[in-house]
Image (cartoon, rainbow over all chains, first blue to last red; front, side, top):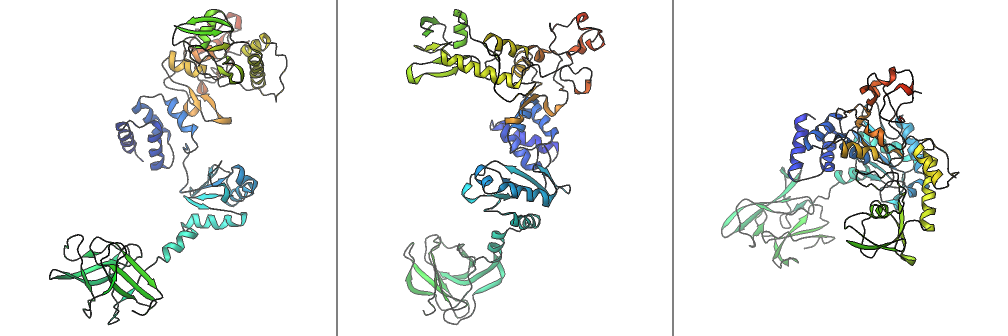
Length: 283
Length: 223
């Protein structure tokens, strides 16, 4: 990071009378550590002695005066983790990485450090890698954590990202798919249906990612109005008499493409009421 | 004026003064180490402990940082205070036995031995030099660094500070003298006070010939 960037940070923070710590935090975020030049600049710009700035920077463990690696792994050595064998894990990391705690690998990839307590003692021994928490770590898991850290893939997240809960629906009458793979919303194919109100008819689009049901319409429909939702293929209405639990408006019902249930969505504009009824193949 | 009782004597002292100032003004001796006239109180050494309050509510406070209060009952030399002070001196002796200031304190309080692991630190982290540098010399060249076990005093990045004027004030107030004269290693120098003398003390034959204003010179190891 250049001089101007650091000056910007100081300027921004001195405007809202923020303290030294806020400035140092931001510099550390940008540079991954606190370069000597940056500290001298902070001292000059804020008019405080460099000794004070240096004192703050060395007092808090969150600040580092040495460059850190691209990834940061911290192993907890708090009392609870310690009695559960955290020392073994620290040794294992040191051996695998070939560095001591507090050091960075020569390729600047991984910084390994120990912390005194992460406040999650019941889950100990704890290892945090780039903000991902690993609970009940054993020496055997160390290799796995290192691989995940290097590749940026973390067990729990991998599963979540690969299999988000997607809804695939079809028309309950003609059975044709309502999915539009050409236009994706939130990175997934969207549900494309027909919406009409007051003689105006156009498309309506719903994201297929479960939980994100903000509907977009071709036309500007007024808020809090009931929209007729129908199939773009056979033009049959989706309203089947069921009511939204949120606002009482009619629900539009579509069938899940695999026939395992129905998916209902509120027809009122602005209402995000929806219902996924798995196991109800019959309408 | 504030009315309080010191060692059973009803006194009234000026508002805003500390217990230490009041007691010393009235002639009650309280030993201090990190306190210095003209520097802000810091409360680091705890040697100036006094007991305030009565009965089970009585507690020990550092008199150098405690402002006088109306109706306060202070004991400057109760058994509890003396015991605490002797313990503090023992601990100081354990970390810095070579300091003349600490040796004198031990002698004055009858501390002959100490029961802890003997160390030979050259700093007790009293902060006198830091306060001297920033409050009297307006420099702020040295400061505290790190924390806990790794806490130390020195210049940022351990290089000679560009705001240091080599006044030597830090060494003058130091009770343990951790900032030793490094004129024979100028690149490591913290103050270079001796370099300001003419001729510099390093070039002198004997300590006795030196016109060093530190008498005896606590910085210079040349004998």
